[in-house]
Length: 333
Image (cartoon, rainbow, N blue to C red):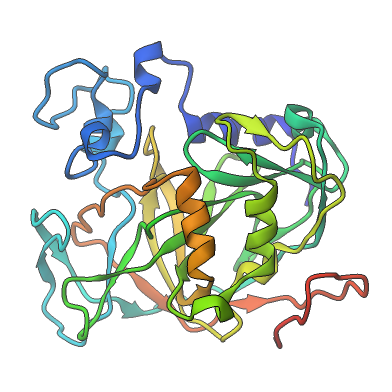
């Protein structure tokens, strides 16, 4: 499915914020900027606030939205909802995740792509190319309108437009063994957008507990070619082959699905979230290099507020049939 350049550019505007006063763009992931509960982004810099947003404020939804992301995913065996947010200790009602009630197949159909050094011009390129980008808030790979990779949710087709990284992980997982929630070393977000503007994000947790044996060659390529200057594109590294599907864990994972929001201003809701249960193995050195770009670029965990998290039993990843792939053994699917 081909995306129009207009919808592609729209996503870029969604993720960095609309055309707002200059002060509205002065947000960071620090507690001073986002607040201890992640709602201070709703207030224009310099205005006094107790984290209660006024509607005229640039990012009001960050504070008043009822379906904000990320969340603590409750997979405990206790049927009683968790009564407090494990990070902020604010009152919450977080029921345990449920097995899916509506069978909606999830299929990843990401195709390999090659990098370009054309910078912002990639946004109108009808060829299958991507760029390495430092957005000023995350390490990102952005795909051109000619890229054909998609996420299929039932019969709905969501084109992949970009992927980016957070350290540490934004979502945490609450289990019987980790009642305060397990936070991973990082998190990868595959961002998809339909022509009608609807967004779906596939989240992959990053686990660095396996030492150098967890070194991921695709992640390493992204680290090596992403520029360190903010709001810039790569000027070297053209024709680098990349298969995004190899950033999805090899084991057959469950997927946690819920209704949420963007995790950066303007915190727009209506985002369909799918968080893979099995983390991707990466090396500690790779996490350290991601942190060298942005030491902590994760939003604090938001209240679940009675939202239901459904557990999908299977994520199908179409196997790459490209005989010219360069990045080593492909997992069995």
